[in-house]
Image 1 (cartoon, one colour):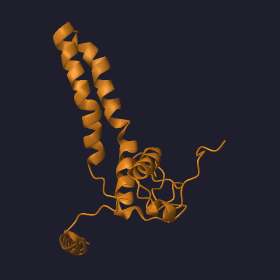
Image 2 (spheres, helix red, strand yellow; image 1 turned 135 degrees about the horizontal axis):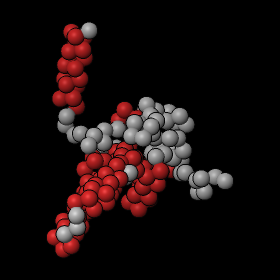
Image 3 (tube, one colour; image 1 turned 120 degrees about the vertical axis):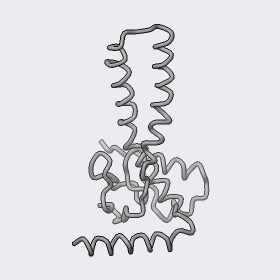
Image 4 (tube, one colour; image 1 turned 90 degrees about the vertical axis):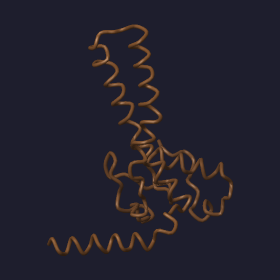
Length: 157
């Protein structure tokens, strides 16, 4: 059985789409499933959080993607902070023994923060591609920075 029942729109058709809902649907579909944001068919991830170098279907180079610590930030905002309030409420209201927090609160917090990292990273990468996100006005700075890194690596080597 085909895992993708609806065919992915062609990149040209998707780029002509001006509807925000269509963009959002495409970003969520590709990002959360870990599919290439260009063709919607290739795999975005080589492992749990490591991006492929390029799409094996359409050849999209993933070097544009820079989600950095965004997935961790969103994961903490969505899961860790609300769960922290629940844990504090549980402690204040019911005073459970320490082992209750050790057995339930800590694993819930860890699983709740780690499991959504991949879909959130996919969502951020797809958002960057669809919205053609770049750091405005920093091209020269980035070029200088990368030139220094290359020079340092040559001097060390």
